[in-house]
Length: 237
Image 1 (cartoon, one colour):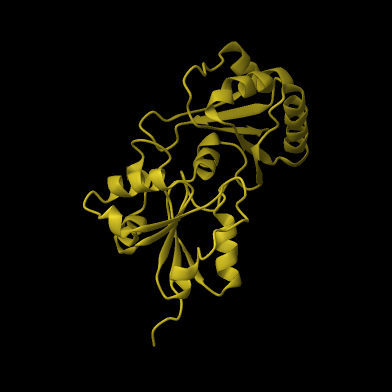
Image 2 (tube, rainbow, N blue to C red):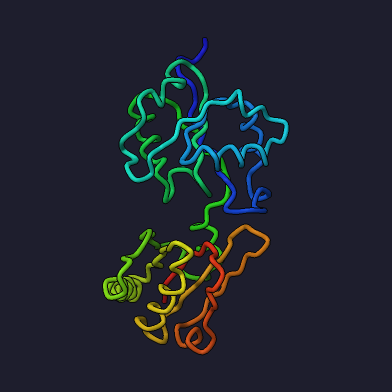
């Protein structure tokens, strides 16, 4: 008996140039069979697929673009291929769909419509950073982006530090690369000398760097954020 709806595959994307090797064999095996994709940006998705499948005929594929600023406002008919029995791939800009990613609303809608969801293995900057940090991997929380204004950001940082001290919970957060330097400076000015900070840069890429040091150690030897590099910050005890 044939299935009535297609499968929504959650297809991981590389975390940057040179990160294709971090994708699982399962993800690369599924990709050639997909003709319909839900993406954040069509241009990025096309470039990724072409790099993973050089012989692919991109013109035969159909892309549905999400509005990352209003992810709940799904384009009309975005799940129609699935409802007609076609498989679809949900692609993030980088990393795993649905994790720090507007694709989560698509997955929720698929569940509501009885569509099977199949996650595929691939790089997650958050889990890679947590694994490599040496901080508590049994109890952790991801906070996304912290406030942009320095005063509010420092207040939030101190609150995260108090939570880490009280519960042992590792606190993860990120920033747009061009604001990494300002965030790093606020971290060093706001947190206690004994608090631990991990900075994970360019995860899964050839230029990857990961360091875990106390705030006191960071103050003696700070990082230079002149280059705009994707980073994950982790605070713990």
